[in-house]
Image (cartoon, rainbow, N blue to C red):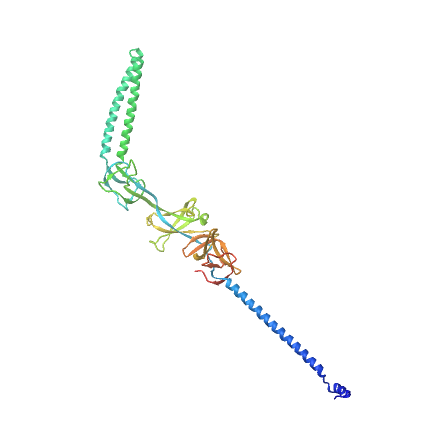
Length: 398
């Protein structure tokens, strides 16, 4: 047994805590350690769970984003050029028809011949008209003879009625016969002039300077003036000293195409060569079917190098204030509310209305609605709506 002195001396001299105290300290340390271990376990467990939830949320958001490819619109030059197809036409084209019936006696010019105004193109034999004219002239002479005798008779009756030798009724009858005879002469004279005009149409003349582009008759052919319908044309005459070219200008450029503006004409048969023309007029009305403005360009062709009917490309200069960009055709969305494109902004798709200018096939020109800095979605899905989250992969427009 330990005495009180030993216990006291041991506590003071040895410096050791009593066993009970040591046991309490050990228990305290164990409790604290357990609490720390449990706290650490809880912390790391909650943190791992939160991290997993964050990763799951991010994966879900990434999975909800549509993967799209975008292109950047290509800006056009400030001083741009509008190229439109057109067909060359003669300044004047006229079918030359016969105005009398008969047979073609002779023709003097074939296709490709250049003729002057008043040149004799053909002669027509008109035996029936000639006979009718002879008969009409004979009828006129008969009517003139009847007029002469009616005039003499009327004058005699006027003299006799003054002396009371004849009645007033007989005198009035003689005066009426005179007026009828004059009317018959006028009628016969008009018929003679009509047949003389028909006979004058035996000779077919060129109405203006030009080129014979077609000859649709030959010697001995029956000529029908077409009294009951349109007769067959004998020749086709074209004035090609000035060439007309009609082009359909899109509505968006209608205000930019003004008369007296310069234009260049280019044709495949003249590679590397251009012909200068000028806009002379437009229809001042938009075609509701094509939404275009019909515009006429005239080109000087005194040397005759340009031929009517040729396919040409007309280059029109647009003013500097006209701005546009081009995008691939597979970026367009056709919606009931109008034409749209999908643009990526702040990680989300936005449907933007646009206005189309020219259609190049693989690409289209946009004159309103887009900027060169926009990211336009290529091959957008039909279900795309504004606000849809998207994930982009850039690609330059070709």
